[in-house]
Image (cartoon, rainbow, N blue to C red; front, side, top):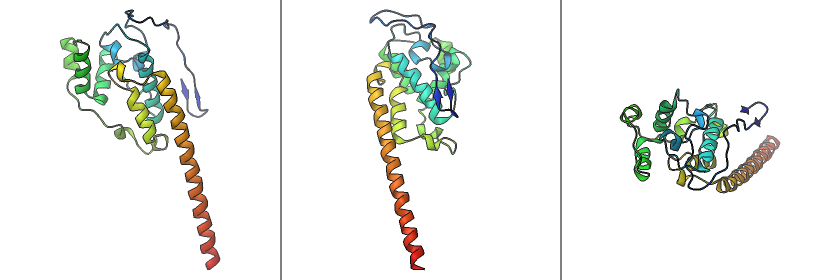
Length: 192
């Protein structure tokens, strides 16, 4: 849950949490629909921690684009359609082929064909102050169909530190730039 005004994030709903054991097949009826990874929506039962990284990507996209939930499907099938409309169907089909999965004909027809949308399509006047190239790169590495291509939790933590560092250096540069502009205007005022 996110409270933008108070700048608070609360992680909730641990009811279906369980320990991960490599090679174990898990139930795909887990996770809140809006944060479900593609592996759950295509019935891949051999999933792992990378599922949580997808969910993080969904939350992060919702925060930076101010669109919550970011993928707003009305049911599990529609959820996959919403994802495909953003990430494209070429990547979805490559993912399905890699793991020898097939969509049911009805779901395949629902998903249709879509090209990948650039993340810039989601930037507008209301959210542009929340988006940076580093944030887009971070998001792009989380929201991947192939769970093996997503950032790990450790890699994500390193990137978040880099995000903060780059934001801090940008803020320092902005402050220096503002100070320099201020000094220039003082000089101009003195010349009058």
